[in-house]
Length: 83
Image 1 (spheres, rainbow, N blue to C red):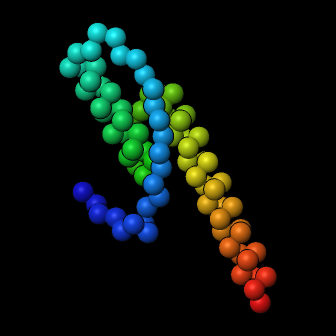
Image 2 (image 1 turned 120 degrees about the vertical axis):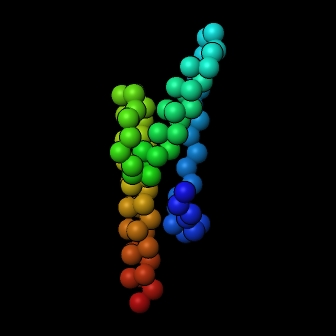
Image 3 (image 1 turned 90 degrees about the vertical axis):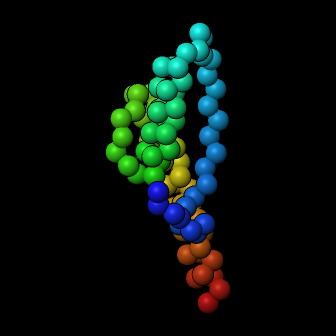
């Protein structure tokens, strides 16, 4: 397992709501595997995901990239204004 420094990672919170009917071990295994693969996909790994989950990963990554771009743009503007 790779260890990250706090500055190396971005913390993201995503709430997933689901109803599982007639819970059994195989459903729990699939759900656990999908959650783990979702986390790995957010870190940039190539993993197998259901198409809906893959779309959510792509949407979340676009949102993160957009937020980072705004942060960089704001930092550049403020550094120029200080001079």
